[in-house]
Length: 317
Length: 285
Image 1: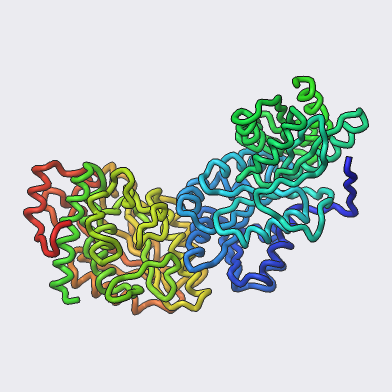
Image 2: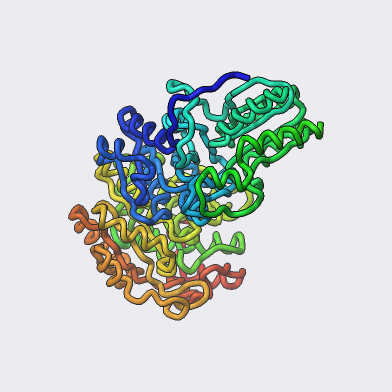
């Protein structure tokens, strides 16, 4: 198992803020919008240096999405930012008509996704956003795994023409990817090559998968771990290549098991290469208040759960 | 253009509207007929448009030109006809309205790359937000073009409209003119009965807008004068609202003043009766 170490823990939303800071200096067309959550989205450095290119929308997310669509008419690259719940479910129709169907170059950047939002509870813990966004024709959906990757993804989507949903979160987690990485949209990242089971993980679950890989190794199981940071377009080639080798799959995501990464992978398997698949995901329920660690444990989203799922998948081969 | 010429264009646009809706036996004639003077006055007289050899040239960004957005997308027939008559695309294409493989979708869309359309609309309440974004982009680009947006009066019942109405004066978006088509009708009946908007002018004023009124929205001279006045008030830190009083179905006597023709197509007899009231001034498509 390839060794992954870290010297610090950071939140992925800070990676977004750092990416925006850099974009503010590099690209004069980048405009940031926020619906009264500037601190949570770590936008202060961008706003300080580019006050004219920041638009405070107040608590009105629907208007923010429409504004963003309008800003593209004139060549701006709007980054519309708020919590993932308010960036997707609350404004689905606005995104559908004014952004996706109209094919506008809007970047919807969503923090506090999933259970790891923690104590605020289920009203804010959206677990359906990946599904909603990936169902929109033409929408690119990205869920990076740590601070560095989120920063790189933030910078990369400014150069991509088209609507993007970028999802990140609140908890501090290990920073284990390279600081100077180049982010390639739609290209899965090989975390560890293995032969016994393919673990496809996204977002915060990638670090859990790495830990699971180490636990499996101690039991003589050689896991292949792939970071699927882009849910759509999905890197089908990387998935199939891995499954050809291992013959079974675990998908891991901080999302409802319905409609997320797991289902996207299952579609690929059904069409091209039948193989047993086990889901590590929230089992079609809402979340609740608690610490991130408590919630991941209760809802079955830890390294231990990935290990169990891997063994089940191998047994079904 | 002289007022008489503009009126001739309006008459032809009205013929196009009823023929398009009749041709596919669906669509929304009522609001389209009521807003005809506004569309003709804007596109043939007031909007600064990019042109080459007397013909408009469409580019999505609309740099250095005025932009128009239609929020109540269901009155697409009047927009399509006006755009075609203005030269954005061939008038023959109007015959494809709402038919399979047409660029003239039931509600306007950029998806089929129809010249003149910059955003999809139809799901109500979104157009003002989009127009505000486009207006702010113009400010960021030091572009002196003006952004116009039309909404329905029934549409004012959508919550998002009021998010945008709050936003615009706060950010001093003073390169934008919004219209409300005050025809007093919506699908289920008169607006005062379905959901009374009460005094929209006072509401917008209370939110910080400058409000003017065009009492005779189907009088070409009155519309031109109102547009001139609206434009003269730009640039003073406040967005402009124009309350455009129109008659739904205006120009076709049996369609006038009733919500019943909001989204109903005329049959053959009704079409003949309607066309009998509208001069064919530019030649039917």
